[in-house]
Image (cartoon, rainbow, N blue to C red; front, side, top):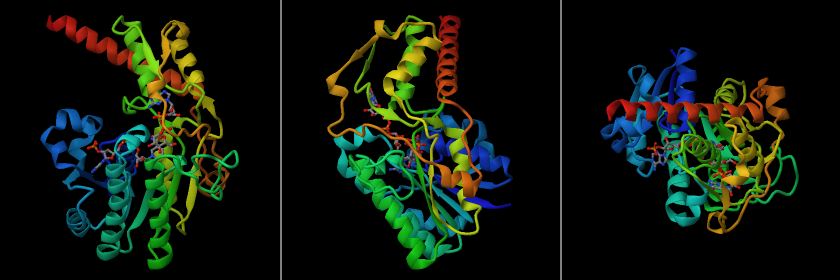
Length: 332
Ligand code: NAP
Ligand code: GDD
């Protein structure tokens, strides 16, 4: 059994990756914050259905000794470093904690891995936010970075730390440059889930308005389960490398809104209100990825279309809200 360690296993991607690796016959270990073990109902909800098949270890991304101890104990053959403060908007409000957690966390994981299990293959969750103010479109592996947020800056630093551990110490370390990927497990603070969840609440009479920021921003949105497979493929190659993972299609937030309301049979213009307070101090206006290298080398290709993605997220939220409604009625 190959042993894998996932940081950020409680997040959207971590939960899909854990499921995927179990299906491949892996022994799956995950790093979680101690508070998560104390409040599993809420904090481990995305992995509740696989808890009996994975091994969780409490540690803090901010503490080198705690990461070092887990590397020493588990000694994984593959390590997927997904943990991060991942919400771009919040990174403007608390730039210090985002930068400290994301950069130090990556550095600690890489350094502990070099000391304790240098043969372990390493994946870093890089991001299309690194391209930021893009100088060409679509963006590929050689497009220059121009990050526009503390989050983006922290990911550029993680990207170069990963490259440096590969070049200086011979670690099998790969950067995934993943464009936005969403699912029914997406956090509620991200625009896609905020939209689909509010659409479902409006449909059931639990909300009457959706406040949004910049509707003109364009993103290359894919389906998360397909993206975790790409992470795994990167670590199965003969040589470590960096890959863009994207659909190659870009849509505005307005397109997402319109399609989501449409799926629920509602007219979005009656409910959406633009609020200047939700604009970012520096915006990434348009992202669109060129994943031809991943297609050629990894044989990776996305299948879920934009339209299908929105549909499946709205339908999942309609089902969730309906079930919560029924439970409430039964308990009253
Ligand atoms: P997510 O749902 O926000 O999950 C983030 C994970 O990081 C959670 O498990 C969270 O744990 C953990 N974490 C955050 N701060 C931590 C800390 N101080 N100590 C320990 N754990 C901490 O993010 P995601 O969408 O799955 O994304 C996974 C990774 O890919 C992130 O690094 C993200 O930046 C990157 N990425 C995501 C996308 C995307 O579109 N989804 C695109 C490119 C790159 P808690 O549950 O305890 O908070
Ligand atoms: N969150 C949010 N909330 N975004 C809004 C809103 C709103 O009310 N209104 C408009 N937007 C716009 C943002 O300004 C941004 O241009 C776009 O919607 C997408 O925002 P998010 O869903 O928060 O995602 P993101 O693109 O900033 O970041 C995500 O993708 C990155 C990859 O490009 C995150 O998953 C990052 O962790 C990831 O690296």
